[in-house]
Amino acid sequence: MQATIDCGQDETPQECGCDGTCDNPDPICIQSCENEPKCLCKEGFVRDGNNDCIKKSGCP
Image 1: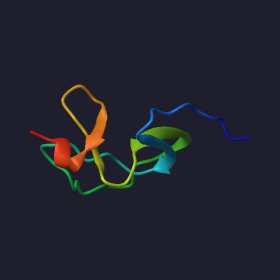
Image 2 (image 1 turned 45 degrees about the vertical axis):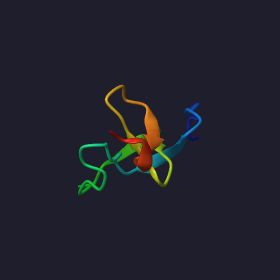
Image 3 (image 1 turned 90 degrees about the vertical axis):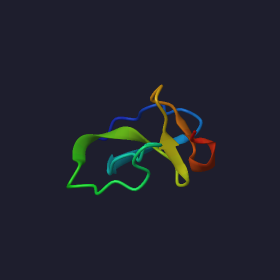
Image 4 (image 1 turned 135 degrees about the horizontal axis):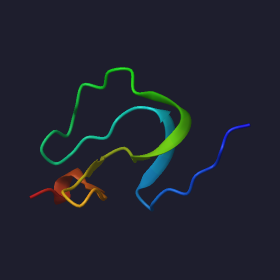
């Protein structure tokens, strides 16, 4: 049975993937799968310096 997690407003639970950041919006993701889901930013969002998901257009 898979655990459920509560993600932020601009996040979605995923088992595989990695977040882009303002400095690196399209990172090369190397097999980043976990047994438990983790919260990743939704499409079109990246992590800012505070580790929050923001729209790419909101990056400084």
